[in-house]
Length: 359
Image 1: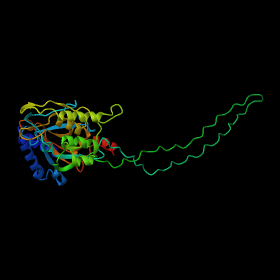
Image 2: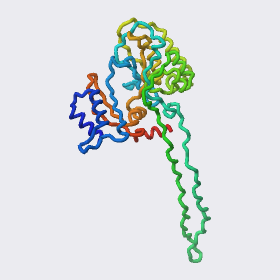
Image 3: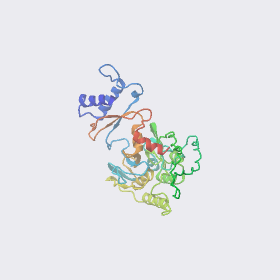
Image 4: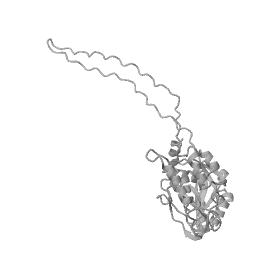
């Protein structure tokens, strides 16, 4: 009902040229005070806490214009927006001709969510908790076969046996699976964005190799967005076939950091191939590839996110109730605002199986 009212109002009252900010202001007012013809409020109780989220196209004037968005899959491996492992900087980089300072490197974007233990690719679900075992009833013992009776015959003939019916046994009960246990959230969505001091490329690289996820996030976070497990296995994880995979990655990062800084001036930044890397290692590769500050004193940064079709993105979008507004480069709304999610956590059928498997 709410969604249909919002659609009617935005389509007919304001028309197709509604800007994102106008649309957001209108829907905020509808959530707070909107009523139908009978005077009944559209949004009541906890529904009044519905958030309206404006997702504009990125612009060079954005507060975090210096950020590369890194879309990942549910295993925290980089997919890229085109599912080819490539990540892109959307604007022209106005280089200063100087290497970024440690202070500029550590000015990372806000963190909006953290991966829980159950959501980490390194998480091993505990054994399922079975219901108290009950022994099936013991069937009665199988009786010995009764000798077949013999039909009367004439003298000298061979007696013909008469088949006796086979003994019937009670059916053996089939054990049932234990009930599904408590589900665990793959992510913790923060109530408000958290601004933390990040780590330098060198420090973050060391942190991913030697620290626990908790120690890493408290000391050397390389990126904003979603704080993921820094030990998420990827192409840099040593294996029997390539025991030096991480050492080789560290060498690549160090070589890039030691290259000459490009001269001052505007330039287009090429795409970075992060195929097979987790989000953190991809961010380190991006920062090492473009390690100069820009003319405004900002260094390249990263925001970790998930591709739209991933279960973690679905969880982020549907936890709690919200309205999503998208606009184009001209600041005009480009799609019908949708009311999505539910309280308290917004579980959806297509999510449940995945979450249960990690519980």
